[in-house]
Length: 312
Image 1: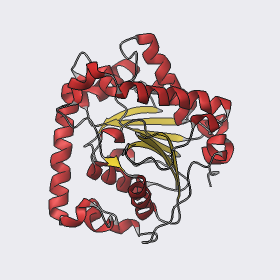
Image 2: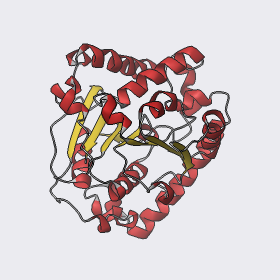
Image 3: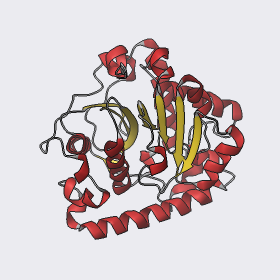
Image 4: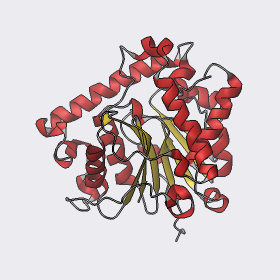
């Protein structure tokens, strides 16, 4: 039996600051067989899906993913493709791009020691052009990256190559392809991906992950949060020095880029911005989905982003 990984909330002061309060579900643990994509309308009580029947919800999800695939195909061919992948200050500069990727990859693996990483299969949702791969794949047992955009997947294959331990797969933008469900992933992450996704796509991905996840699995991702809801914001200074520096860099990127008016026209007319969660909505959503058997940790440095960790 594989030894459960010791996660960030146990080893680092991303832990000691309490990522968040573990949440419990009023629904309890649901059998995996009931968590089909068509069951999303019934499963997430209190969501907009309550007004849709299963057929309508499935149809809307398919239409949404079709739009997202088309838009990301267009973005991948743009001269500003890197901006769409990681909209941080200096995205045009190759050195700054690479350094930010290193910082983001370190944050993804924060709290996982070398021994754990080398024995861990890792899945990245929304791998883009593979900017994090050089800083993650060499540290883990295997790396699998999926993306909705075929151009990005092809770029990954051509630029980074595929090996026995590294692979890239195009997906439909809402769940995990059956072809990659051939191993236990100790870490599943989506780095700044769900911040670009509507609610039904986020829900579909998380349902799909829960269906195939074997314990133990660490799931990490970010979502947009309503800036009018100022609950649960903590100062990044409360982290230990190493975590603080990494988190501060990520935090500064988010804050500065929100005011980058020169890029606003690139995203204003599209579905680039994802669903804005209120914190009580986010807690309820994750609790109802993952139930009492999982630990859900939330950490929020500013009004725009919530970092989410689910320990399955």
